[in-house]
Image (cartoon, rainbow, N blue to C red; front, side, top):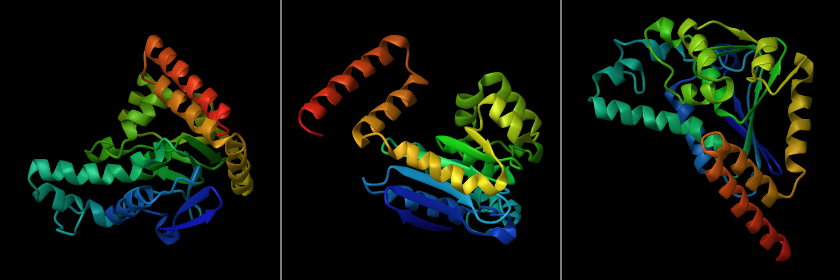
Length: 249
């Protein structure tokens, strides 16, 4: 995995194109380190995959339950239950930071986004799909469950019934359907993916940083807050913005 910085935009690139950007526990640790190292000047984070796929999910080596390779399923099976759950919690941290209050995250998705790849795309605030993109959560067919924050983000995006159907069948969702059900923010021809993400990033950077971050926080809280709680949050945020503007911030 590599990162690059262009002003307020940080790009995180999964860089194993020969393996379709298959992920390992080292990937998740590296993602968590990126999240922990963010500075306040970063406003947009773009997550992308090198080559023809966003990410085809877990690397095959992780699936070997007989192996004691660090981070593999075999090691998790051999750990005490609480320690295994704590290990997965650390993996989840590599995904959850993509909803950090100070940033807006964008997944640039081409080709396959399967399993852990799908959950990484879902972890972002926004998703730009190339026309060939397919998102799939096949964990149940392997006797497993999505455990990298994917269930909460999927339900938030498409609702309970559709999320249940997608997770229980493990079927592929193409770009056109993803746009129709709210998984994809935009769908563009493959050659236009990079430019579309750049244009969206520029649009997100256009408003003043204080108003942008306050608005993003309100929209995020609205997903789970009742009306009185959300109304109060809007009042508090607006008064704070007025004070900031009066003070020249």
